[in-house]
Image 1 (tube, rainbow, N blue to C red):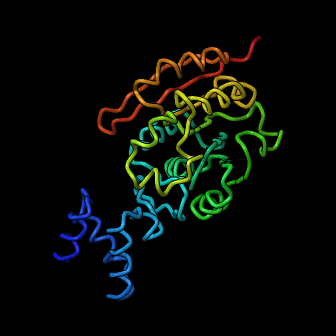
Image 2 (image 1 turned 180 degrees about the horizontal axis):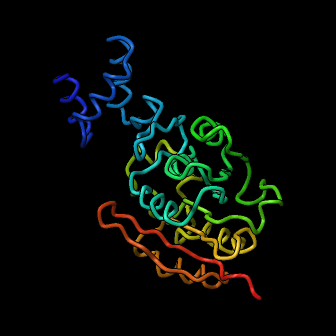
Amino acid sequence: MVDLVSRLRAAGCVFAEDEAAILESAAESPEHLERMAARRVDGEPLEYIVGYADFRGLRIAVATGVFVPRQRTGFLVECAIDRIRPSEVLLDLCCGAGAIGAAVAAAVPGIELHASDIDPIAVDCARANLPATASTYVGDLFSPLPAGLAGRIQVLTANVPYVPRDEIDMMPPEARLHERPSALDGGDDGLDVLRQVAASAPSWLRPCGHLLVETSEAQAPTAIEIMRSAGLTASAHESEDLFATVVIGTRGPAQT
């Protein structure tokens, strides 16, 4: 254990003790542990090596290349939980491995859950992580969704890629070298995909339904303007504990 911690620390692993414990618990033999340790020292994300990520008390299965859920996204989950009740519809767009939908469903049993992503491997992971009652789809943003969802969604979570393209090279190598570029690249200002989502969201949300997205603190004012231009009321919310920013857009009530 001491030797493994030292090797991981020397390789730049900030939480070397925790990672060593995870690797040891996942190892089926000393030889298996050595293979996993070598992969980690070589820079491969821990989550790909053991096949899961811990997220809000859940073990989320992840495959190589699939976006690894970040702990800060727990704040987006908290915001979603506060805005949905049993029997209401949650759509987890750009769902990746399905961590957001799984966490909301665990906290609010009985929601009607839908999840979609352009990456079929990510959707395979989501199917393994979400309740059996969830519906999953493969395709670009809203394109694979059934028409019957239009106007019914109470909460639309969309953890879209929001890294500005010229900042990807500054990301930690675990992300920029191992996760798919499509899960990171948000265009010139990082908000290109958000623009697409916000433009279509009002027709999918029910009256007083909510669109929730994660952004950086610096991007939040522009994200708010994007949502307002799409006809949503919008505001930014911060979590100092998780260093997270969530922008929430709300469709107005039905006209009478």
